[in-house]
View 1 (tube, rainbow, N blue to C red):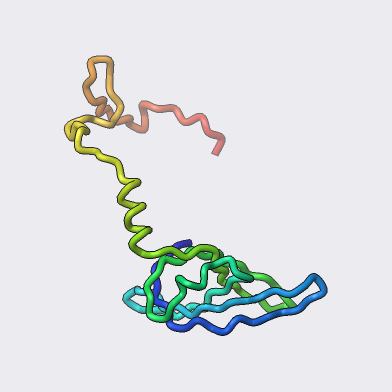
View 2: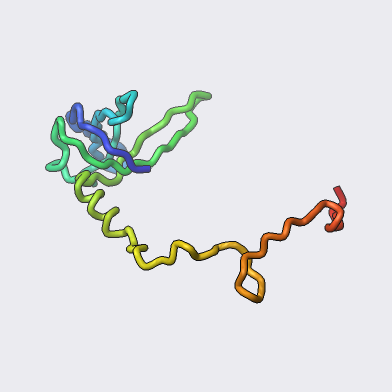
Length: 135
């Protein structure tokens, strides 16, 4: 899932020590640019995202995964950040992906055609078809 948002706050990293080693959890608070803006806490582990991009007040494109898990009968949802890119980079790549349709014949018919190349506009009546379905 991708969306554009403004960074409100970059939280201090949390160092978590487990039996498998140390991990660093980073949280970023963003606000969507919708008619009804929503604040979302995005999380990522270790240094998967370049911290130089994450500046308060900056508008960026965020790619996230949503994941829920159950623990003791309660459900918890994580919003995992996996990619951050500049809004202008995303817009430029979208423009580059668009194809040039200027040479397409706008009068072309896309419906079924008969052997003479004319559009087949027959309508099947209920009594013309036999229903062989068992229900």
